[in-house]
Length: 117
Image (cartoon, rainbow, N blue to C red; front, side, top):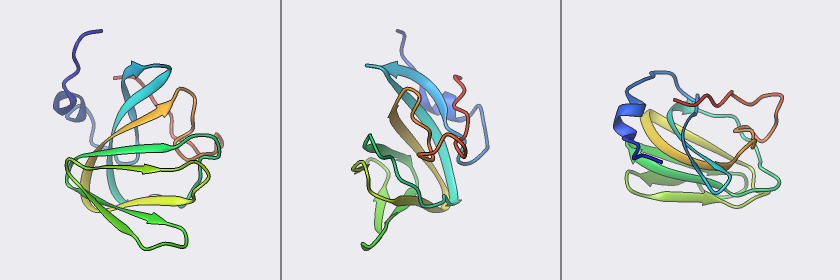
């Protein structure tokens, strides 16, 4: 595996809520994505959800709890089975790590494709 420049990968697209695979790690997809607005509440029943904010800030809404702001350089891990929703008032750039095949929405019927760039 060669190194991956996340800034260069993020410059390749402008869409939001559209994760792109940039590397593989122990049967996981390492992805970059841009957030803006609100993603629907959803749950991952069998896996934790990993977020690393690269630029900007996001708010993580957790069902039944107070929202938390996550800033550049911070990670947020949502435990499996917890209903959540990431939001960003302004564009936010994020690195995600998910098991290969895990739908980003927790549901294959509503999941975005995850192309490799």
